Figure 1: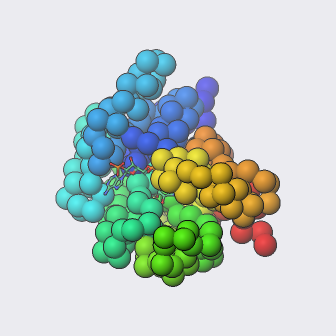
Figure 2 (figure 1 turned 45 degrees about the vertical axis):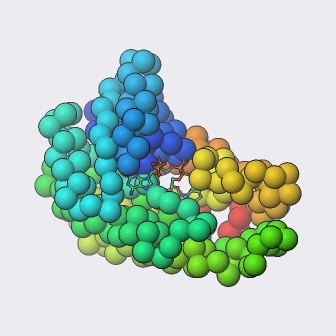
Figure 3 (figure 1 turned 90 degrees about the vertical axis):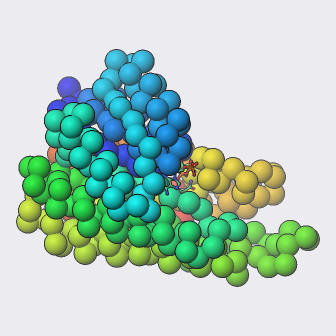
Length: 259
Ligand code: NAP
């Protein structure tokens, strides 16, 4: 029997990358999965992939910047599957050219509201586990490749980098606070801090051999991560095997933050 048999999970960002890999892994471990994403068609494709393998899944379109939509997603998941024990607050946007408000609204406010409404909801429904996706940028600042000739500034000075780092440090802080607040109510709250993972989010940075080599060199293991390597840790944190794990912000980064 899989480690998530009898569990129901709501996963955001489930249309792509880490979220999709996690939806597939959680389902493989026996969970029923509500795949949620701004990209509703992509979320439906993830659900269809699970169903094709004989797993249980449904999908919905969700913008995590809307608290009302988050509350509706919690209720829809219970209506669909009869309960809810796992929330994986994973949806996010990269730094790049995005402005402060967009990055903070999705990456930080989205997670803050998911916790504000999701943690008491799980407690009322018998307890469970919440996992948030932070980042190495939730533990340390980012370093970037030297600017290309046509760029004015390197990554370190781009406003998007500061906003991304602030948002992910915020997710780490929220994780600890909610772990303290809800631990005694049967809800564990943990975060994962991935290194650079090969997903659409990092595709542009990996676009040139120089860009990819720069990123690889940041990781002592000498390679980038795969979304399945984050999904495996998320499945562990979501499962009863992690029954005394609460309030950690766990690097899954090939040693990036070890130096
Ligand atoms: P991804 O492949 O781009 O997937 C992110 C998903 O989130 C996309 O489907 C995206 O939809 C969705 N999304 C964006 N804004 C949303 C919103 N407001 N409401 C609901 N869904 C929204 O990226 P990923 O690499 O899997 O990233 C997943 C998480 O890991 C993010 O929180 C990211 O910050 C974090 N992370 C990633 C890395 C990495 O190297 N990849 C490293 C550390 C942390 P659209 O495509 O429609 O925008």
